[in-house]
Each structure stands twice: as C-alpha cells, then as structure tokens.
Image: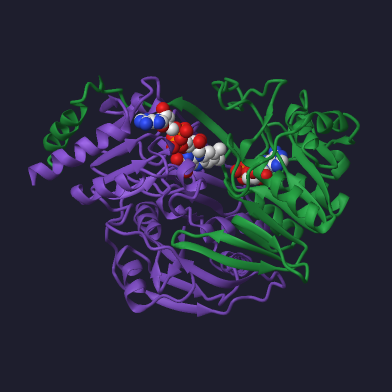
Length: 253
Length: 314
Ligand SMILES: Cc1cc2nc3c(=O)[nH]c(=O)nc-3n(C[C@H](O)[C@H](O)[C@H](O)COP(=O)(O)OP(=O)(O)OC[C@H]3O[C@@H](n4cnc5c(N)ncnc54)[C@H](O)[C@@H]3O)c2cc1C
Ligand SMILES: Nc1ncnc2c1ncn2[C@@H]1O[C@H](COP(=O)(O)O)[C@@H](O)[C@H]1O
C-alpha cells in the first residue's frame, strides 16, 4: 500500500508565536518542529505500511528550514519526503494548502492519504476534507483507531459526540487521525543515520501547476482582554474551605 | 441576501449549534434557511422554525458518511438560491461538509468564528493562539461565504414567525462511498456537560485510579464531569467528556479544574465560565493565570476534603 502522510512543520508551540506586524502571518523560524498532531498520522502510516508491506511518503507545505521535523519522521521509518516550499505560498489559506497537497500527492500516486485532524498553529481543521474532495476520494475523518481489513479496505473507529462509529471504505481513501490513536515511536540511532540518505524532494507551486490566489484578507489582529488571575492560595490543609466559601458566595450551593 | 445554517440531526433533532446559528443569522438577514442532514422529526423542525428558519432542506444519506452528498446537494441549492453566507457548527459532519463544499465551489472557509458581520464584505472574527489574539478576516471576491463557528459563540434565542416549509431532497449519487457499519453510544452519567451549572474537570494530575473522585465530587454538587484531552487520549474517559479546542465548549457558572495544566487548547473550551477554581500542585501552572481562586495543592488531599465538607453541609 502506497501511503501519503501530510505533515506540517510549525514553530515550537512552547515558544511565544510572533506575528509579522504587516502581513499578520506567523513568523516562521528556521528551526521548526513537526506538529505533534501529525506525529500520530506518521505512526499510523508506519504501522499500516508494516502490515501491508507498503511505503510511506511525507508531504509538507511550508518553509523547508532545517527540515528538523521532516528528518525526524524519516528517522522513524518514512521512506521519502516531498516538501512544497515556495515564497508565493506564504500565508496560504486552507484551500490553497489543500490544492497544493492534492497536486503533490496525485503526482506521486497513492492508495491512502493520512492527515491530522487539525494543526496546532492554524487549527482550521478543514484541510483533510478539502483534500479528499479535490482527490475525489472518501474521507474517514476523526479516526481514533485504524485497521486494514482482509480485502484491503480501511476500517476506522470515528469519534462522534455521542461515542464512536465504525466506518469502512475501499482505497483510495483519506483518513484523518485524532491524537492518542497510537503511541508515536522515537527515532533510534540507526534510523537517524539512515534518514540522512533518504530522498527529500523540494518543489514549487509552479512545478505543481498551481497559481495561488487570495480569497480572504486579514483586517486586524488585536490582543484579547484576558481574564485576570485571582487569588492564589497555597494549601495548608484548609484550602478546601476556601473553595466551599467561594461556592457559597456564587450561590451554587 | 439569504443566510443558511447547516445542521446534522440526532434521532430527528437538530444540533444545539443550529439554534445558536439561526439566532445569529436572523440578526444578519430576514431570509434564513436550514440545510439538515438526516430526517428531522416534527419537534426538531419546529425548534428550527421557532429560532427563525423559514425554509428547511433535508437530505438523508442513510448509512453513508453524508458529507460528499451534502456538499453536492448544497452546491446545487447555493446555485439556485444564492445565499450570502452558510454557517456551520463544529460537529464532524459540519466540518466534513464545509471542507468539501469549499473545494467544490473554490471558495475559502473560515473556521473557529466567534462573530460574523455582513455590513460590507462578509467578515469573521476569530480568536487564535488559545484566545489571546482576536483576528478579523474578510472574504474577498464573489461567491458564498462559508463559515465554521465555535459553539456557544451566540446564545440561542427563539424568534421569527415560527412557520417553516420543509423540503426533502434525495442524496445525490457521488461515487464516494464510506459506510457506517456500527454505531456505538457511550453514555455518561449525570447532567449534560454543555448545559450544567457546575463542571468538575479532571486532568492528567488526577490519575486514572483516582479519577472516580471527580464523579464523587460532581455527585455532591449536582455537577457534570469533564476532562482534558490528556485524560481522554489515555482512555480513562470517553471523548464525550473532552473540553477544549477539539472537544466541548462549556460556560458553566462554576468550573473546577483539578490537575489540569491549562494548555491553550483546553482553555479555549472553558475560559468564559463564570467562576473558575483550579487545584494544581504546580504554582506555575498556566491555569492559575485565569482562575478566580487557585489552590496550590495536591488534588488527592484537597478533593476528598472538599467532598467531606460538602457532604457535612447537606
Ligand atoms: C490541535 C490540538 C488540539 C487540542 N485540543 C485539546 C482539547 O480540546 N482539550 C484539551 O484539554 N487539550 C487539548 N489539546 C492538548 C493540550 O495541548 C494539553 O496537552 C492537554 O490539555 C493537557 O492535559 P492536562 O492538563 O490534563 O495534562 P498535563 O498538561 O500533563 O497537566 C497535568 C497537570 O496536573 C498537575 N498535577 C499533577 N499531579 C497533581 C496532583 N497530585 N495534584 C494536583 N495537580 C497535579 C500538574 O502540575 C500539571 O499541571 C490539544 C492539543 C493540540 C495540539
Ligand atoms: N502546510 C501543510 N503541510 C502539510 N500538511 C498540512 C499542512 N496544513 C495542514 N496539513 C494537514 O492537514 C491537517 C489539518 O490541518 P488544518 O486544517 O490546518 O487544521 C494537519 O494535521 C496536516 O496533516
């Protein structure tokens, strides 16, 4: 099975995000990490590739930078990576991102596309569905468990507000995975060495025949008045009394 | 120009977000319609009418994931009726349909909206980076504005004429097949998390073994129990408990966060609660930055003592 995994490189969420005052886009440092959300997609892909003797190709749109995130995923076992890095794509909306990813994936060929449910920095959460529509394939979204059946179909447990549904489709198909679906593996020394020799293709939007267009404009970005921190009490064994007192004050008890 | 609201249905009832979105839609236009996936029962259709829906188009996709057919049906209806805006909630079918429709129409979709305006180009407000920055974005060019909104961004208030025309349409054949073969409902006990006046939220700091103390505390307070994603991912409680960016949004009178660090993705789902109380052993925990009362202490001593004190009162 030929598996395409969409992975996004993002600035480390542990560092405060800087916004360009003119464009309002997130300033992207050279050193970006792989979005934690996508580490689950990579792990699912690696497991499915093991059971189906398949291949795993990573697809990422955005500034290549030091490739830290991509290299790490290659070190855990992915076979190759395709990075679409083009200044013309800076600040792309979700639909443009989906078009770029769809073109890159279609060019390589695929049986299965795997994405996260939503990215940590953008969290529009619609790229997977746009991608599936552009590729004209079913999308099994919000998967908390993924299996391949004996006849080669994919079967997922799909999170719903009430519980979960079991959903099946034949390939080609797209699956978006939630976190916690699997335990992402860590790269070992052998993997890190092997990753150095794995192919990383860098392509532009023009290579894919895409001319980005802007259909939305950011008007303003303003800080939100945040809640003030209230009282902080170090528990000396009577902390619970303060809670009871506040519950009485708010008249919920 | 018309504003349309998307809703999924559960046993014939529309989603709660649909009633919120209709209330907002009414404030933007006199011409408000609903597109529903599934088949509404009479009470469900009436609830939509009572919140301002004048027309309802419903499409049942049977045991198929509905989004591919819903996107095609909506594409045709949008061509015929030319609505200015289609508002979606955050349910899975809402998001699946919004994404597919966006690709079909070659129009962007703006997500996580907390406000929408249409004097001038359609403009959406959303909060990014866990709600510390507010961004205002306008749609450009011709065509419908597709917007995915955050739950509880608008209060649901009845209004409008209360009468509605329901039209059932056939699910278009898409050739895209994803079949639901089983449905599982994971019941949670106690009050509805999204409607409860008091929410007890447990995080990783509570630990799996002691997580039942959350139920006990909720029991004495008549509260609902929620959880952080760390707890849901670990499988201690079902996804229906999750509060935050990818879970439920709650606005109770009182929110008690136990052993929760206060990551921004958690905070977006509860920061508008009336009073926030946090118990965490790390005085640097970000949750204290938004808590009205923070107790720096061990949940395993504070919570049992609290339960005993509350029991003694009653
Ligand atoms: C795209 C995306 C979406 C996300 N969506 C959500 C979401 O919807 N909801 C959500 O909650 N998270 C979400 N997250 C995850 C989020 O970033 C955090 O990882 C998560 O909220 C952490 O959960 P936690 O606070 O329970 O665990 P931790 O961050 O591990 O915190 C545990 C806390 O417990 C405290 N503690 C430990 N032991 C004790 C004790 N004995 N007594 C008192 N305190 C103790 C610790 O000091 C610590 O602060 C999302 C992440 C991403 C990337
Ligand atoms: N720039 C990108 N490059 C690669 N994959 C992406 C990119 N943006 C989004 N994705 C994929 O789409 C998922 C959802 O992202 P989003 O719709 O931005 O919230 C992510 O988890 C990724 O798998």
